[in-house]
Length: 165
Image 1: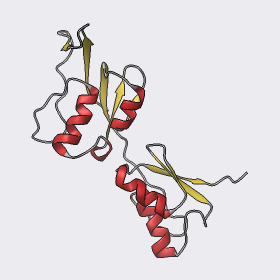
Image 2: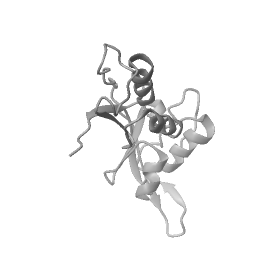
Image 3: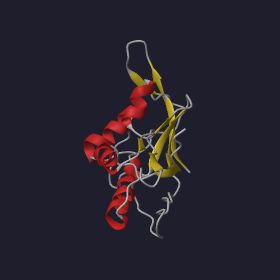
């Protein structure tokens, strides 16, 4: 479901101006916030600085006209995209993987690793599985997941069988 779409042009001296025939820049998705950031990077920074939140925590991502999908500031910075024309989309409802040993569905990658350790006295590597976060990071153990959980607030993850070939 598309929330908004707008276009930015860059002048030679680095200033940015919204094209007059395009829709108004999108309003921040945070309730009661009337800010309309002009660029994709500006929007990501606004969420971080003013609301202490991220795209993933709000269940949204940015799809740029260059074809790149951004879930975080790091994604946007890696591609060095100027955020010219982009749309803000809502993530699909996420169904987390079921525990391999019971009927529970832990909500986060860290929660999954912790659930295995606390409730079943086993680990991801002992079960021959790993978790893959939406940001692309792979986890084989509880400790790695705990460190990553402090940096990434993504709740979207998948469960995979480890291939030791």
